[in-house]
Amino acid sequence: MQEVLKFLTDNPTFYIATSSADGPRVRPFGFVMEDNGKLYFTTSNQKDVFKQLQADPRFEISTTSADGGKWIRIRGKVVFDTRKEIAEKAFAAAEFFTPMYQSPDNPILEFFYIAEGEATFYSFTDAPKTVKF
Image (tube, rainbow, N blue to C red):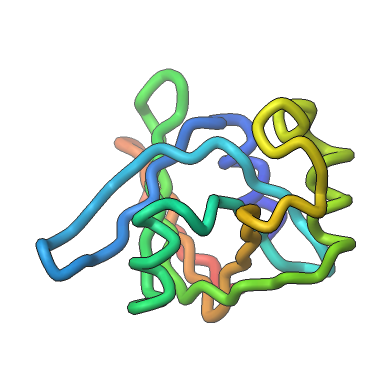
């Protein structure tokens, strides 16, 4: 899982794909952190992505390395986590949370982690490598 976290933090714009009644949806994300062996992400409960993940918790993430020679695909199920300590840890880890959400108590802020996670690392030169977490 640490290898997955490193790839996402080294390539900080990654794309999360969800499904909706209208079909697949993809959007950029840029925050990930680890807590107790789980990868956490955040969104607002005012966004469609939140509603889509509530309706169908399955999703995929993908991003490429800066040189484009390596990429990752991650899939799993979302588990929402409303514990205040997760929000506090995120605010301590990422300065951009304060201007966006003001405080860890903001009621629109939602955190989720990956359950049943599976990441596959790809490159043009090496065989794919899959990690479950």
